[in-house]
Length: 232
Image (cartoon, rainbow, N blue to C red; front, top):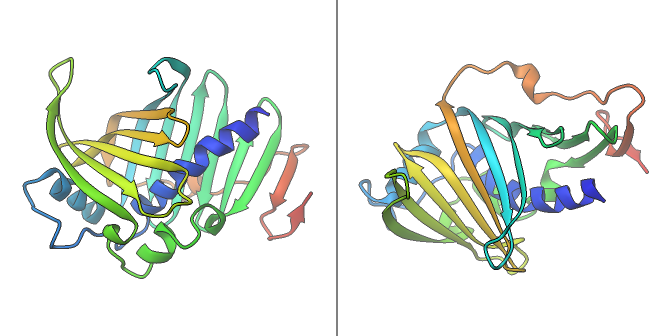
């Protein structure tokens, strides 16, 4: 049950990551003002090819009460590759190798593998791979700058998915120094997933082995294996 629950959480922001990971993502000139929050997001999408960061992920209910908290590290490289590793309170790893997305639960010794396109059919991946603008997928709103409790000022952008089938109804991105530091994703049940990134490095050289995965010996594999064969 835990792996199934996790995949439902992953499914929503994987659609957003397909936006961040596909080269050619852009905001149209009609919407983009270079000095605005949207302009900061556009430069991030255009200029960042690789990224590493630590993250804290918190799930809140509709009353704002914390339901679940986890921490880990993420590595991203364009196009379509990331390594998302939960280290606390339990160890799980999600790896996208460009064709497949692997979910590995170390405690359960279980691997679930899905084709990349199964998480982004006809939305970000299909449109942005052909050079489409973000406005083809989201309604983009500039929320301006806001100063947090500890005095940190960020530029905020709100993305509202246009597809009625989207897992999340609203996404907010908090940027500082033209880098995404916070993601807030509101789902149809009123729950919010908040991701806070720290120790961010943009455009570092990353080991390609971070983005490949071989199921450990003895692990239960469900889905497609490395050769594309199906597992029950």
